[in-house]
Length: 386
Image (cartoon, rainbow, N blue to C red; front, side, top):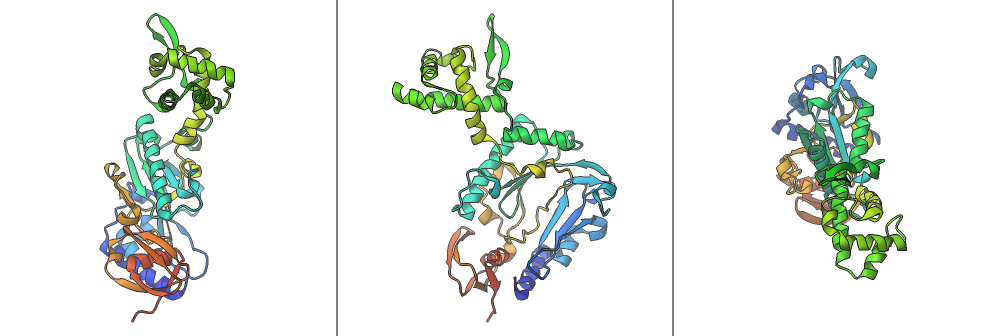
């Protein structure tokens, strides 16, 4: 990045911060702070082990320093500005989840930025289902990262003192890692009979049962030959077992809908075992695992600007997630006011602020938000105005 580009972006980030009211996280004084300034050269200088005593008022700091990136810690400490983690004296930590397009199993190499972010939002919805329905967490903050995905901050008191191993168990659950089909089945009385049941009231068992019913509906709409072929596509089901399962489905549909695994004998249980892997692959939350297990993790400050995109790191109300469009709603108002000249060095198509731009590698006048995006992404340098 050329010096003129760097100076322009730093100045405009400062203009944004002077017009913005950035709210710090709870217990901000007990957290470590870090930031990346607009330094010369190909790499980045990462400044950390700071406290609010070092930085001062966060709004004043942002307007004065105009950082490229700014972070605060999930952890709270007795001495957040100590130079080593051991000497900080850990007290507690939020539980942080990071969904990044780079970790999505369904992302394709030729996906556009907008397509990656839409897939990431689908994963966010699945993650929130786990956190609210399965764990009953209540104090959640959802944030667009400003880059390739979303963060979720959990601040319920019950998780604040969990160490890495306990956080690892939460990770394994939302990822479906090591999910044992036997663990999903429980024994209960159905009338006067003890039955093995796949619960339908929540958790992974509910997700597997939902997929079981969808599968049953799917093969009910086909011929017997097609249904048998579909069954044999599943792991562990051969021709004989497929016929057994197909017969059980025809005879015991109502019992299967209720979750009764005894109704179809071993065949239905085999079908459930085969569908567990499909359910995990389709419905797990592909979080960045080290972020959640790390009690000392630094995470982006909501209200700041992401120096790799020029987009805002933005809190999102739960009710607004479905309608949220990061490439429109996270464009800072500061950058909407006028056009600028940039020298495009990496052309191509860009979708931003509800519009689509096809750029060639030359000097061009564009809306400032687009120019800032291109410069932050390393796809343009600041041109001469006038």
